Image (cartoon, rainbow, N blue to C red; front, side):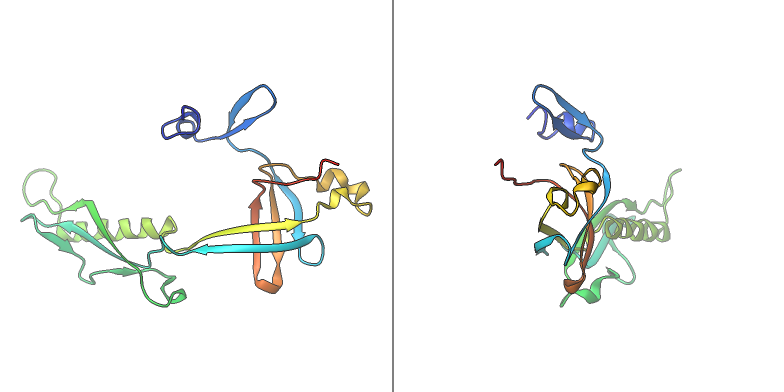
Length: 189
């Protein structure tokens, strides 16, 4: 918990935990960006993916507070995501915006127009953070070309290690992404 838990060392210093036989280190990032490609017809054996739509939001209704303490809605009521058309029906979310409080008296006056602008900015921040995109998990099975006879002279260029980024290209199913290696299996014999 002290290393990986909530409020632990990894979260506090926003890094990743790496270790060898005797030491533990917190670094900004494990691994490197490699120019290795995993391609269909070259070294890709299989690919499986899972699309999670549980936290996707495509329509946000922000609310603030007017001078009387009542809920303040936008004139258009809600703001749709640019990705709304990618889904069968909209998924709603209510977003209370604490900065959108109308103040008519004092030095910190805030008009309804300023409240509307704050509400729109809060919604745009949610969309920029990716709340309208599903979480996609890919599992890629491939042959490490560095271990084959044909690539023996390129072994140093083809090896990848934990944390390294590689390009995965499977045009037949429309996948072209950059992924990090997070786990591997090997035959010790």
